Image (cartoon, rainbow, N blue to C red):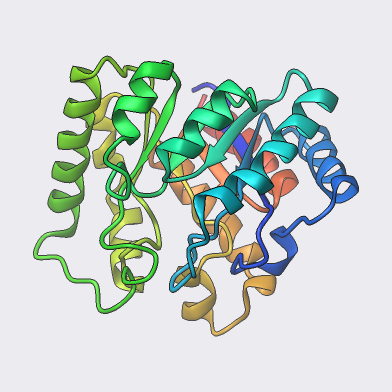
Length: 264
């Protein structure tokens, strides 16, 4: 087993569900990237448009206006860090890759919210994180229903992977989308069955950090959900996850090192 990659979250919005992941000025952003690197993270994931449940979606111009200066700042000061951009807009992808020198696109919508996304990713030949979502950030948590959770998610991902490959996109990471159009029970069923997604033969990203599947079940706040996050990150790694997207990099890196030692 290779050591899983740890992706540190940097939100440059005012609307992330976890307040401590919001970074508003250059000094704070650079300090956050420095901490991610020093704690063993290898990827930074930059989000300039909130995708929390019920989020108000800002304009594309607003997203680009926040994102590009941040990308320039990080690339200038950390030229070797791998930068992922969390966006569902093809126009933002084009700017982020060409002008912002980003490396990976992390699309929470799996191409559902912008019909040009797959063509743009193919044209720019950029690695793509394909995440499952049911609905949109505004609607996804309004009584989500599945007849067969795992089969439906796997079929959805399979169709998307086929389309991407037909367009020439081969560098695909799959994310089953914990918390995106899924009730608490769905999220835990997904975790129990995460190993099934190994059939794709693609890297798996797990984004569980401080999410409602933890804090609602435990009747705590996101600020108190680090321990629960570590527990579920451990399970995700044991079930085949290759990348953890997290707020708390040091703890995730330690978890990954321990699991690698246990399974080697």
